[in-house]
Image 1 (spheres, helix red, strand yellow):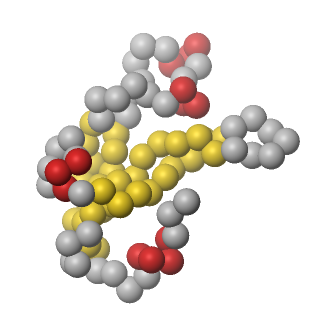
Image 2 (spheres, rainbow, N blue to C red; image 1 turned 180 degrees about the vertical axis):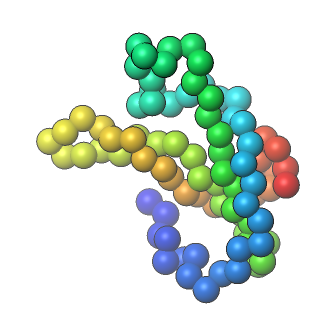
Length: 84
C-alpha cells in the first residue's frame, strides 16, 4: 500500500483528468449502470518530477463485502495513456 506521508512537503504543479480505456472495475458495476459507465484517471505531477496515478480499486473490509476505493501509485510518464 502506498504511504501518503511520502507526499508531505511536495509541491503539486499539475492535476490531469483523462478517460481510461481499461474495463470498468467490477466493484463499480451493477445492473443499474450496465453499458454506460465512464471511468477516468487522475494524474498528479509534482515539482520534483514524480508523477502519481489515482485510480479505482477494491478494498477488502473484514466481515463485509469488498468496498469501493481509490488507490494512488507512482508511475513513469511513459506508462500513462495520455502523457502530460
